[in-house]
Amino acid sequence: MELIKAKTIFEPFKIKMVEPLHQLTLKERQVALQRAKYNLFSLPAESVTFDLLTDSGTSAMSANQWSAMMKADESYAGAQSYYHFERTIQRLTGLKHVIPTHQGRSAEYLLMKAALKPGQFVLGNTHFDTTRANIESAGAKAIDLPCKENEDSSSLDPFKGNIDLVALEHFLQSHPQEVAFVVMTVTNNSVGGQPVSLQNMKAAAHLCRTYKVPLFIDCARFAENCYFIKLREGGQTHRTIRDIAQELFSYGTGAMMSAKKDAFGNIGGFLAVQDDGLAEEIRRLMVITEGFPTYGGLAGRDLEALAVGLEEVLDESYLAYRIRSVEYFGRALEEMGYITVRPWGGHAVYIDAAKTLPHLPVLQYPGQSLSVALYEHIGVRSVEVGTVMLGQRDPITGKELPAPKELVRLAMPRRVYTQSHVDYILEMAGYLKSDLRDVPGYQITKQPRFLRHFTCEFEPIKLKKPSQ
Ligand code: F0G
Picture 1 (cartoon, helix red, strand yellow):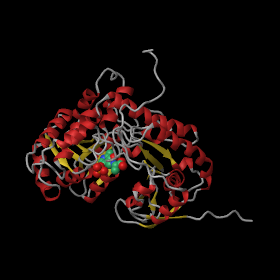
Picture 2 (tube, helix red, strand yellow):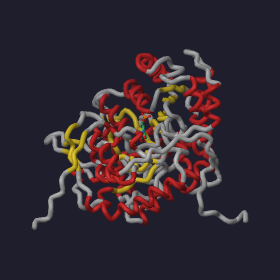
Picture 3 (tube, rainbow, N blue to C red):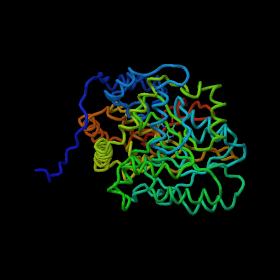
Picture 4 (tube, rainbow, N blue to C red):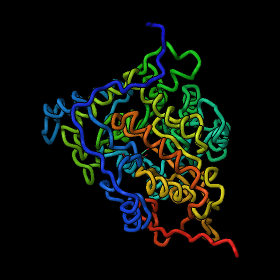
């Protein structure tokens, strides 16, 4: 019996506290969509049955996290909870200075403010949208250098999150004075939650040292990345996740984290750096917006929850369940004819909306269209990761330029939904598939200057009736 490998994935936890799921009729969802101007970020959460908008801040915390929160020290300065947080991150990353922040983007903001000058470049495997916005609002330029394997969303390359090392070296060589630093995002969220290999990180670090450029790791999903390394990279299967993570972090001169992902936090983040001068500058700046350097906008109980979460996420039985359940979801969607980004990533399944809805031109936002349809018919909230989120304007003509891919992300909150929830979504997605050829495209009727996807408003484009 011991040798039999079961096909059924079971959640490696039992449930102590429950909350109801909101169930709406089709008509109620259609009204909610109109009120939200077809922007799913504007839907009240109580209109959503399965909230796969994000895996960020949506985790269920463990009994150990909750009990640590009860014991937390809420002192303004030098709280014991801060030292617990600091020790945990120092042990994991090997980095000297640990600076708590209220979430990932505030760590980005502080780093960009302290270390960037207008006109400089920040290179990366693919900057997440808030990272890009923080770089650009500091007057610098964010350059994405994803590896070539990433171009084909159906290729099964194991490390499609890698940076293109040839392009990186070329850029560093041709702009010797203008590159401020490199950011490696693990896993690479914007290209499908794809992992970065140890080998790629090591080679990028080597280039950064050669050209005397710092390397920061955006480690929001570092544990999922390390589990992929263990599964897929030669010679790594015998190692523990902690051991792999320690090596991964050893290649960075700093790390920043949205602890709302792999640290199972509902809020929080940090910036960890080796350099004394940089840490001093960041601590000086953060007092203005984040708070004193030993709490950084967080309560002592948040620091405790994150310190415990950062240990829990290294558990391999959890990571095996996590990665296998995303794969189960992706495989079933693919078998029904939805075209997904392969291999399936760590925290989400990404549907290639341009290929799934071939009747819509990219500037009618097929990703937006598919995510509206998934909400309208199944009650699932997803997010468009395509031209609405990542599109740019031609600097000369001002014309809208499409993003490289039109994706819809179905992100799995950690430890929240069960396999029967996923089975229900899959069954309904099967019924919806044949109706997708009739879904309309969208146009934007109102939008802000930065990060437009959060607040812009849409209108469906009426499909022309075939002439009689
Ligand atoms: N870096 C990465 C790779 C992220 O995925 C995110 C957030 C951030 C930085 C910013 O962190 O939200 O704590 O300020 N990603 C969320 C998502 C929003 O849905 O993928 P934050």
